[in-house]
Length: 268
Image (tube, rainbow, N blue to C red; front, side, top):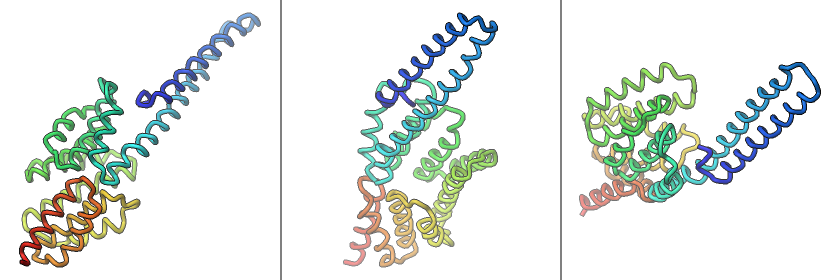
């Protein structure tokens, strides 16, 4: 990850080289001091620890910069700009290893946001790292919901539930469980069962902190569409308007517009 940003990559290597040079110089100095034969080699261990600490620090800085400059675009419903910035940043850098999985996980989210699920699916197939399989399952759940394939959605939900049982991070567990809950309500609505859905969506908007624009528009659209299906177009209009106004270039703006036009057409 560090190599995504040149300044961090260069700084990391400079620190690493400096540490190694200091280690070698110290070892040579200790040898000339006629210490016990093993003493010079003890310097190796703190050097290795410092190199790992340096890698951890620069990885954290990279992740923070990536979130603040790129991921925030998607959170603010600037999906196409997010994809463009992501592709430029990872160009020629996602060739092998876990970086390929990270890149395609992020790409899949962007493509899903603009309703390009064919491209999203291609990216999902490249999510191969073991510790990203839960992210792959969540992406597949979203994909199968978009295609209306209930059986595949339910199968993926069960896979994700199995993975959740082994997780220890409470915040990530909450994210995975929310993905499952969203999918379950989507399936029920598709089957004509609207019970509890409106309350659930409203609760999500009240409890998710921070509530980024993309979360607000997704749940607003979900409520609006639900109310249309329930035959309550006037109540639906308020939520659909929120999705339209804040939806940027995401699928939610486009779909909200279609619903609003249909409501207007039904009134004329």
